[in-house]
Length: 573
Ligand code: ADP
Image 1: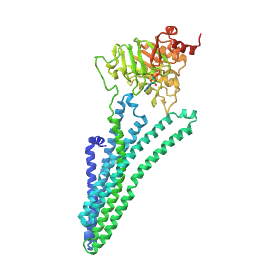
Image 2 (image 1 turned 180 degrees about the vertical axis):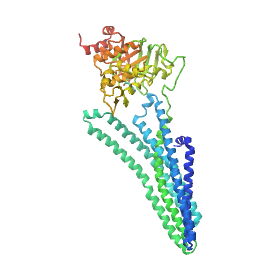
Image 3 (image 1 turned 180 degrees about the horizontal axis):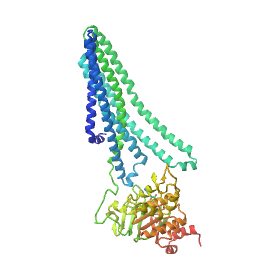
Image 4 (image 1 turned 135 degrees about the horizontal axis):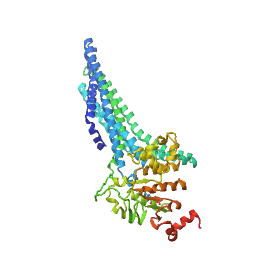
């Protein structure tokens, strides 16, 4: 929690102004009962109207200053907390962006979303409250006790006994509630995860008629969150009636002993009124204090969760920009794997075992093989999403680890298996691959990926919105748009991870034909032999190993697995 306070540093002037006005407000508020006591004892009791008017005017002036100080304090507290929230969110977001894929898998996406939204909001609220009333509450309680001693030391002795006991009790509750709120946040993560999964798979849920099942799954988590939250709040709520009971007991004591003292002339009526006034203030601020405890407990849990992300090492390979050799761009796009083995972090088995092959500059390599045979892993290693566990992966004869990762990736066009499009226009989505691309380059990329004619059929053509508020594209259209996004980068190396599966054979052939003149080294993962046949070379993968490499004719004769796949798709003859 205290580490989070460092985010307030840039706004220390605003925070100090908020504090200063809070202190002015506090001091004057503490003076108000004192002024009322003076008005009663020196004015009303003595029947002196001018004294009543004098103290009355002081009371009005003090109240106006309290009011104005409150407004200024709120303004600066809001300014500071909003800015700190923004800064934390920004730092957290860039920290998450700097994680490698393996680190990212340690945090659930839903949990990261909760941390970026709910947890940051929790901290923001706490900072606001901190500058507005959190510090005011203990100071006012302490100030009210001191003022009570000034007014009537004998009666004020009660506070010395009762208030520390109450505080001890509240701190105990605070600690317990802190632990309870950590569980609440965890449950919230779960709920977010289920909601994300459900909303993302709404079509699947409908066609599988799993609505009731999913509703039950959601309700189960929801009830669990409800129970956990209720039990955390219950803990906090027990503090309020106990606090009220004790403080009401003090008021009764003041009235009882006060009336005796007034009768024996050892106290005045004004003093008793002032003491009761201080007691009610202490009561109201003790309840605020209990509320603050709750907010603080939640903020502590949130701060811990934010801190966990911030403390995680930024380990994206992007960060370790290494220039061991004085070259950081791909010149030709010649790719060679030398006895490469790879094991995913935390995986039991190797996903790639002793893989060796070569793709010459500008050539096309097709990779075929069963699901899970390691095809995607190969292309991910080329984009350096992971580093090889053993062996060497070289591009243009240089070890891939000697390239600056950003420059390496700038020269790569990668189309993933699942085409992901962003909210925005068709043009925005293609340009996402290369922000500097001119209009003609966008159209050229769309033409090459065989989507140009489809785009022209839309009313707003390249400015057509896609996503929730725009047109819905078919699977094949999405795939071609994702390919256009990669082509607009004019990559030296093009990696196509089974991204033409939804295209018909004719369109796919045209697409591959239009990529050829681009002279980029292309690696395409495919399930279709008809596609693989057009490549210069075909790599056959099985259980992480290369079981065949060559052109179609060669493989038909000397690779059993390839022949099997071929026969399944074309028949034995
Ligand atoms: P393919 O593309 O041929 O379907 P992959 O390269 O995706 O195969 O996967 C190869 C193997 O690595 C599979 O056994 C798969 O379960 C495993 N694998 C893939 N991705 C991960 C990951 N992120 N973490 C752990 N294991 C993985």
